[in-house]
Image (cartoon, rainbow, N blue to C red; front, side, top):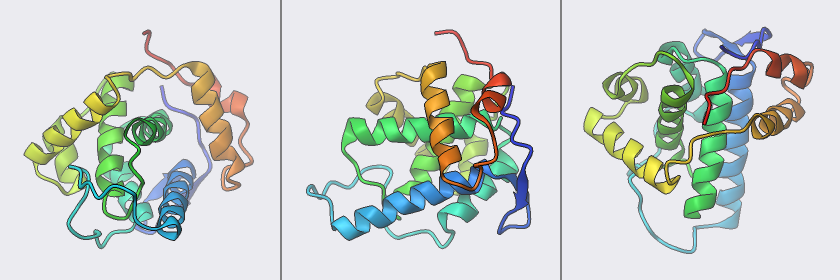
Length: 188
């Protein structure tokens, strides 16, 4: 089941999106801006998630595109955000305009495969994300190994992240209990 985020807004692409989508985009953008202020990362390692140049589509446009085409439950967006946090903690990688897009499509694809009963294949997500199927497969494997295949998210952790998203102000009207009431977690 999906989160009942009834409040929606018209996104930059003209698609009606739940307020959750721009909130996550805003948080990712803030992280990128913080990292740019801090300067270049200490290690000059290029990962499979780094593009050679920043995409023309900003984070909000990209996540709205994913929302429009990915056909996944809204709860997957919260779980994907949790996975990105885990990935950053596990790898020490900093979010940048060069890696955020690939991390976003990969984390959302993995979250959908883990959370939803039905999901699209890697080829479909590759098309949505603007990468090749071979690259999508490689991104997924790197992502999963970096997380040590630890994909389970407890109800408590999910609730914590929902509260964090609510505090961002855009979805401040929603109550955690209402969000939590319609979410089904896989056993694990």
